[in-house]
Length: 209
Image (cartoon, rainbow, N blue to C red; front, top):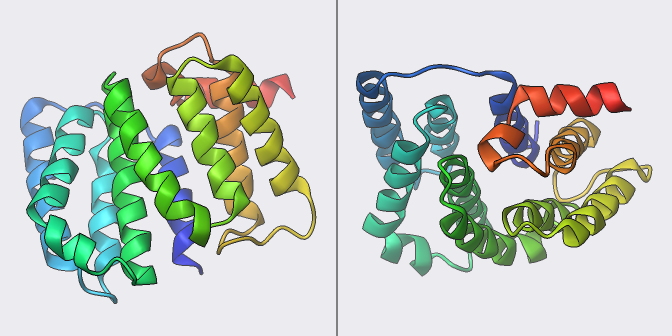
């Protein structure tokens, strides 16, 4: 199972798993996620578990974004020093995308846009056109650019539905999950990111087909 598409599978599952978290619950979960990141991020065989833990932070959006930002700041030299490593590039990409999503859900659109631009730079060479289109779709939504959103969605659909689909470690299931998410953002373009990034919007887009 490719770690690239498992990452996006977990990312999409957030849409289907709404939770409510008190401030104390957020604190407890963030402390656990922070410990996981510190322990595992720079270990090739174990780096994934920290991100799996971070996925559980839904409804702690601001806190989750901030702990990821703090991690990037605290380890900036380590992350940058390994710039030529594909493993490091993948993990930088994950940091940017996950932090951007939490920031956008918290209404911090400019912060999310900057992070997605960084992710796009990491992604464009290593992940292929499909991931670039997905990030472009997210950026267009945050910038309230409907023309760019529709163009990115059309590219994403063409790339995912053109057989055989297997690009940059993404398989057909992962590609369809990205497309479903993208369709939700198109359908709920008039909503906030938090509202569009929900099961309700994804359910609406499935029913609209």
